[in-house]
Length: 187
Image (cartoon, rainbow, N blue to C red):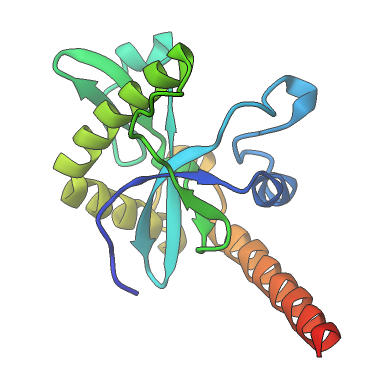
């Protein structure tokens, strides 16, 4: 599988919920905790033979004092912290559950939407300038966790990548079964 240039993607919320059901450390998009309107946004990298989406999150107070590590990177625009990459929360994806985000501003965009697209554009600039380091870091973490070489603290912060790959495989099988059934009905 070839690594493409990094872009920002949104995720299929039903798929994210399936992953959350398998590993409750997957970032929630649950309406019960008022996060159903929050998009799951990230960048997609290739780890082993899987695509993984690394979530981009807004900076919280704790992020200002945190240092970049194997499972975390801060995103800057100049000297301003504008986002973070949570490598520990990266999830396996395929083309059916991701959609490239349009960060181009349109004349019909609301002020809120324009501001969000400007922020995403700045994050994307930083991400593309640091693409090689991001890909290397994601693969290093993936291999550390799956080889058992990660210490217990790091392992406890990271999702169970292999378990989530199983969820992706089941999702793909279910999609294929649905498409095959629909194709047979169409004949």
